[in-house]
Amino acid sequence: MNIYAMKAPSKVNPTSVSLFFVLLGLGYCCWALAPIMWPLWQVSSRMRTACVAAYQETDDRVVIEDLLKSVRHLGLKLSADNFRMTRVAYEPAELENESPAKQQQLGSIGKECVVEFYYDDKYTWPFFGAELRWPYSSTARMSLERLEAKANWLNDFAYNSCTCTSIRRLSEAEEEH
Image (tube, one colour):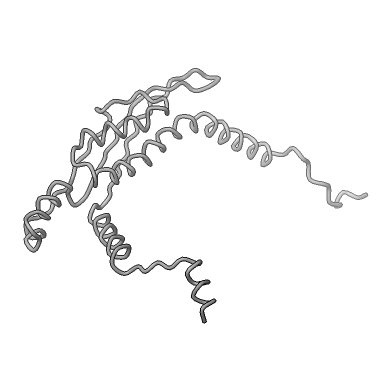
């Protein structure tokens, strides 16, 4: 073997050591932050469900109370003060072609539902004991117009244009021919 022969790469080199520590740090951060973030993401998804419920319930306090009941099991210290729900109203020009009863209904439902969530808490890093202040805010927006259009489409389809025939009737009809 001469001095110009290729040597096998060493298993421990600066690149592999650096990569190991970077992956170890990322793994530690995921392990430490996932239990913090998972309940907050769950609340964000439940906020969209609250927007759907806002189509049927016109009282915002009832919708927020139902939202609080659905996120109670997550272990977060939540109250109604953590949420703010607003409804974007229709412009008068958008409702002028509707009947007075429909105008009143759409006026109480609103055109869009916006649920905002604010949460601020302190957490401690595992192994280090350092405190981490984690403010979190999220906003869920949903157009209530789409729900109205979808509900009308489903009602029209189900009651006006759907003819249902069972398999038994088809087989009896085939036996007669």
